[in-house]
Image (tube, rainbow, N blue to C red; front, side, top):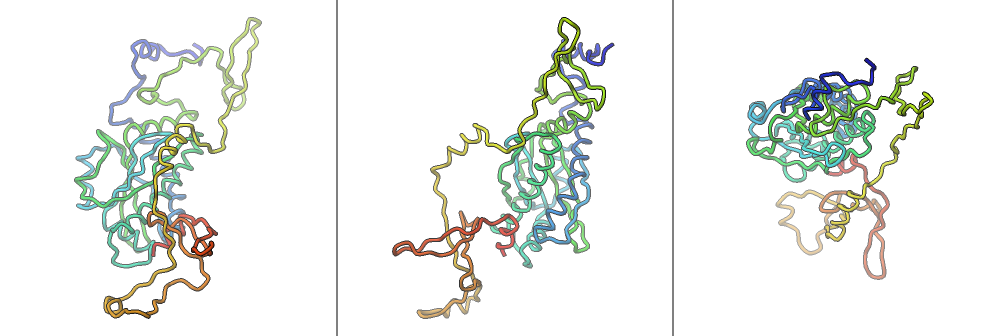
Length: 354
């Protein structure tokens, strides 16, 4: 039997319209192992990323990956948690969230902002969102490289503080990766990354595709019957697609690889156009300071308040209270204005939250 021919089991499954080697809804061991290997390979990059976010001693251990469900998972969580929603909206669209205990979130925020006794208010939750945003960006970069899928993207991560009973987990069974986080203080803390079953299955299939034959395509995906003209080259085993012509020689077609240049799809461009006329509050901040209540009550006309900015230092430009740029003050006719001089990086946004 030739290598391109289907086995009798495969033919029977195709005739019956079922997936070959399909697994229960809870996910297969192959899916779990593929995600576990991928996440383990990303741990070094994730630890380095955390170190850049002003947590120099932070490190992660390879996560423990398993399929679970809501009832089982709730038993592992503290009463109150910080949940960061970071769903994939293209590439492998579906539910993707991070969960950490309230104490873990406070410790992370404290190290990133250099503050003590922090609360998980709106500002500090945005710090947690920033941390997860950088972790997700690192993972997307690795996924893009390993699967050659250039369309992988996620929504902007957004953190909330809720009782664990109110967390919106994916329905049914889902994949959970438990990380051990060492913040350099001699204490290990946990946080979890959650993938819905459809997302984990799609990612696992993409990771396995091209390296080894998966046990089954993702549910809902069609299986193509290999052409008898499909061959593999004798050297590196790279596929050469073609068909035999009448003379017995092969008509070989060049393989077309996708462009590596990032691009915005027509659908994404259409989605962006829907919000182009939405107003957002833009604020220019000259500086800040902290005063005791007695000092504030003692202020009157003529009181001079010293700010934390030096004369001539760039002012902060905020959109919806989030730092996005820095600039210098200019005068336009009789009005003040600001000339943008710098777009801040994610690391600078975190540091300026202190």
